[in-house]
Image (cartoon, rainbow, N blue to C red; front, side):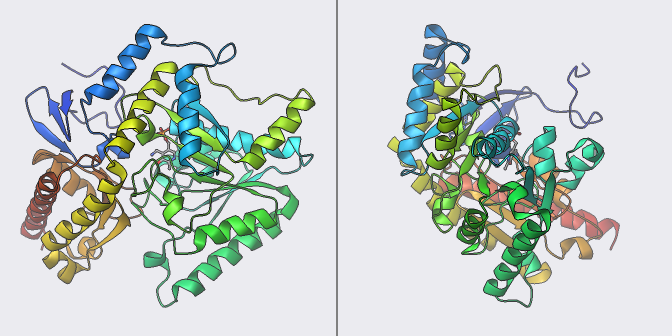
Amino acid sequence: MESAILHRSLGKAYPTAVSGQGVYLITDNGQKILDGSSGAAVSSLGHGNTEVIEAVVTQARNLSFAHTSFFTSDPAEELARVIIDRSNGAFSKVTFLSSGSEAVETALKIARQHHIYNGEPERIHIIGRMHAYHGNTLGALAAGNNPPRRDAFSPLLSSAFHHVSRCFYDADGQGMSEGVYEDRLISEIESKIETLGPKTVAAMIVEPVGGATLGSVPPTRTYLPRLKDLCSRYGILLIFDEVMCGMGRVGSYHAWQQLGGVAPDLQTIGKGLGAGYQPLSAVLLAPKVVAAFEEGSKKSLKFTSGHTFQGHSMGCAGALAVHRILKRDQLISHVGEMGMLLESVLQKGLLSEINEYAVSMRGMGLFRTVDFGRMQVALGGPLAQEVADETFRRGAAVYTCSPAVDAILFAPPFIITAKEVAELSDIFVSALRAVTKRRKGSKL
Ligand code: PMP
């Protein structure tokens, strides 16, 4: 029967996923697919986790929803406290939304309102980075710069958004030391601030580890602390968008904890927060941002941004269970171990491609990218989509990045075992070999 859903590709027949167990999803025709990217870095606990499901069901029985204009709720309060406690003083309040895009929109609005309450209403500009992805709503699209997702809508996007270079040393830093490369990036941002007018910039937003567009790109060593320092000097709020790289994905609770250890003023989280059991995201606020709102409230100013489903009780109860399991089962340190294993197994499997085509790997924790390097030149065009399709046919789902890179992102569930890591790598390598053979047979 023809699908009634407006899918991304209308010409494509999507298999129907009917159940999930551990790292596998099962389709209606019985095919077992290893979820090698947790969807889009979402299903960190894998599928069918009865403890999370029970927590959601119990909460649904007690209280499914109470509008936050009237009430707070126990699961939302408890989850906010857990997140604050695990962040070592970096944040003092949390607001929960349903998607990463909503969290980004909300963070941008909080930044704007912070400046209004502080008596600086002229701060209107937002600085983002090239090839960033911050979501699909118009504000989040404007903040990001993922051309295929953005181009059709650019006439609708605000001119208050500006973009500076990405931090991608392996691709852009050739012939330069890491230090010189970083110096250039920081001075480019400073020039942008000076050009816009130092007192007119409200916020800068960055993904600490790039994700959807370029595939797991960590920054250079001191980039994030220097960014924080620069922003602080100019009174600009720094927003870290950890919707994709946060919540344990790269082997620490927050990604920035491993990347210089400097906390932002605002942070977004999503995806792994509800681990796919519930659609939940959040904005985390540093004490200094909260203080501006407290001052504002003395003058009867309100936080004017709200969504109907924010702080949803079932979402928060599910995420609380996810947090409990992450801690009890020490899954974030398991991410570190399995991430290193995934990298070494892939490297072994791809040895001939690494030597012949400079195929490379990058990333942290269970957020790893295989970049096909010169393969597309040698084999008649980009490979990522064809390899991902072939990998799927052979039993594993992996994520394709934007056409800006010819690369595949791996982000399997945190519960993955060494045996499943080997299975994922074997399926992927065999798919790549099949595509290579096909390309050589047809074109070369
Ligand atoms: N920010 C980042 C860093 C993301 O990777 C994404 C989604 N890939 C979003 C925001 C948007 O999240 P959502 O799709 O849940 O709106």
